[in-house]
Length: 70
Image 1 (cartoon, helix red, strand yellow):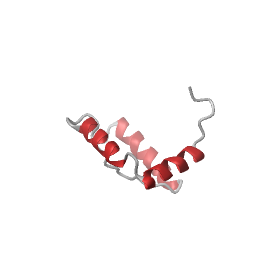
Image 2 (cartoon, rainbow, N blue to C red):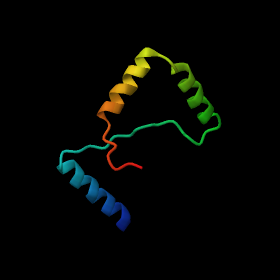
Image 3 (cartoon, rainbow, N blue to C red):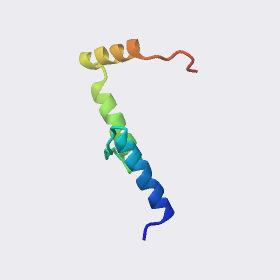
Image 4 (tube, one colour):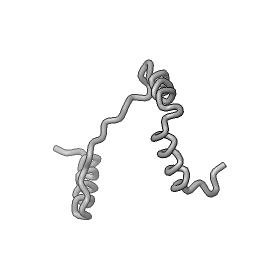
């Protein structure tokens, strides 16, 4: 027998599917894992001064809407 919570979840999922959506599972790095920050720093240092990276950052900065950010 389903609980009222699972009934609500099922109803919500049916509504989302009826709206043309589908569920997607995404796996991302665990930022709490030991060594994560160090690996981020290592990769950032490896890209320092790279012309393709600078071009990408320039494009992102031009496209970013930062109005109202502090």
